[in-house]
Amino acid sequence: MKKIVILTGAGISAESGLKTFRDSDGLWENYSLEDVATPEAWVRNPKLVQEFYNMRRKDVLNAKPNEAHYALAKLEEKFDVTIITQNIDDLHERAGSTNVVHLHGIITRSQSSINPNLTYPINGWEIGMDEVCELGSPLRAHVVWFGEDVPMIAEAANICATAEIFILVGSSLAVYPAAGLVNYVPHHVTKYIIDPNIPSVNQRGPVVKIEERATKGVPNLVADLLL
Ligand code: APR
Image (tube, rainbow, N blue to C red; front, side, top):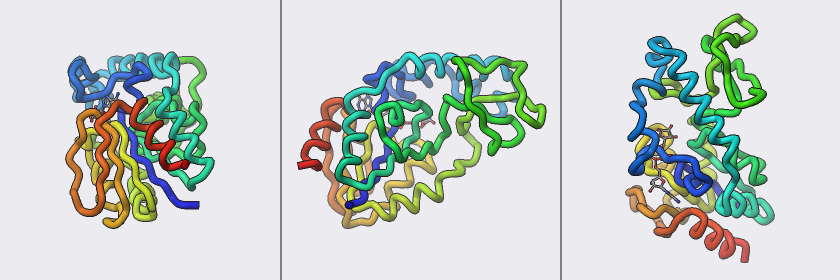
């Protein structure tokens, strides 16, 4: 089976009602990321950070996968598919994708605030300020904050290097190291980019730009690939 590698960003979940980060009225328009998405913020005001992710988790649990998520899951009928997502929602999994690498963690799990390898399922939508890990340290959302390591980045780069088809959906490529993954895709491999505002990528090799919303562009591309 041909290997397809798909890198997704917040744009693929926009039509499921989850805000992106840098579009107008995106999350970073309404919150300063320094106050809610850094280790310093957690030290300074853990309650604000916890509440920010509790609200994000509630939005995720109330959201549903959209036609783009389902179409990517359908690719598994004919291809060896790996989805590398920058998203912390679980919509790819809920749409049926079985091989998803969460570069920036996943909001449906908690993690120990002193050992990121200790992660736990969350029942319900919130982590209480009194909840602690097995080492006795407070639990936080299992997400990668700005300035923290991205433990899966090496594995993700190796996966991109094996791509025979590469698809980028709904990312501004504004944040590294995730944005650098595109450069690991072999130059001869066709890169399909689906986004109403196509981000700039290095033009080496064939690039197919599909200036569409995900729920239109992804099902159409998947239908072509499954022909
Ligand atoms: N369909 C497809 N793409 C869309 C749609 C849509 N309906 N709506 C918006 N987009 C595109 C935007 O044009 C933009 O290119 O989605 C992208 C969203 O970009 P960002 O908000 O920067 O999201 P992302 O690239 O995922 O951010 C990367 O930054 O804040 C951190 O950790 C956070 O994982 C996130 C990372």
